[in-house]
Image (cartoon, rainbow, N blue to C red; front, side):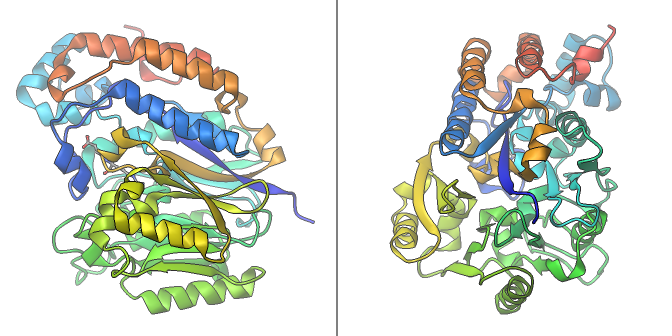
Length: 453
Ligand code: SUG
């Protein structure tokens, strides 16, 4: 009898420098809101309230610390020297976009932190982690080393957890983590089917990818991660995203589909060759898991790709509650769009495992192209794995209250990219993060805490 397992969600805290710099090409919300004012405090609180909702629903919920921003270390590597204030002044004058990249709070989208395979799927029965290299966007590529060290700090036990190096930083191996990875299973304790979705074949010179926007995930990266995680060949599937939807703003597959347990909720235009992907999924599920895969397909007539991108319908979290039923955690934008509201109402009305729905306000994240599912990293764990996880980051009422108090004291109400030149913002951010490491009892994880200057 395998050990009972469950899915835990680890959400990254929005950082104190959350701002709109319009950095993410191909992400329509990021471009649309570039250079508008952000609300870092509200953004943090929105994320925390979503985590609290999941914890109150009986799910295991953890928090991941924000990355240190500005990333002064990267600015130094890029040739800026002198004191921190001098570096900020020179970067503001000479390379404002690089400065913005080093100030982005994009580590908040934990779905891009790593790909994770649970012990039920891996040959050595350990939970495997591969941090994403995120090389397709400069501001995101600088997340990888901190992500890797935080995951090691939170999941330290080598008997239970295996941490791989991120894939080499090369366009051929462009990897965006769990945003392009979905796991299906009959129940969390048993082996599942892992679906890897990619946007282009890096090694195929004839593969031009989408016409307009970058395909952020390559087949070669997905294959390498699946190999590292020692997955059974019969239980892994590689599917190509539809290049036309990438050009409509679907920069990650989790903008157009979401799966959990035996349910797959997806848009009919998500894949290049939908019939073969669905056939492969259904037959792999039928062969390896008990029961049938439940397909909740949404047609273009019901919800257009543009509406899905605007509302982030498919970036809802689909979770299994303690009573075994499934629940959708959808962004409030889906309630405000008639077609997406009708789609969700229909899912609830029809016979399928999804029986409840909660709308959450994560507007500050949405304005940068990140919905509820982007903010979390899913990790299937057993009780034994959970006991070996760093306990200080698990969300309790006490931790929740401490984090609300911390953010209310420490975060600015508003921020504009013009404020990034202000050295006071660097000092505020560091002292906020310094206090956070004590709240989370996670040790000196930040570069500024190791600095001898
Ligand atoms: O990589 N936005 C992120 C949003 C990531 C959403 N994640 C998932 N779909 N899983 C991105 O495009 C915007 C930052 C800026 O413009 O300042 C940004 O990076």
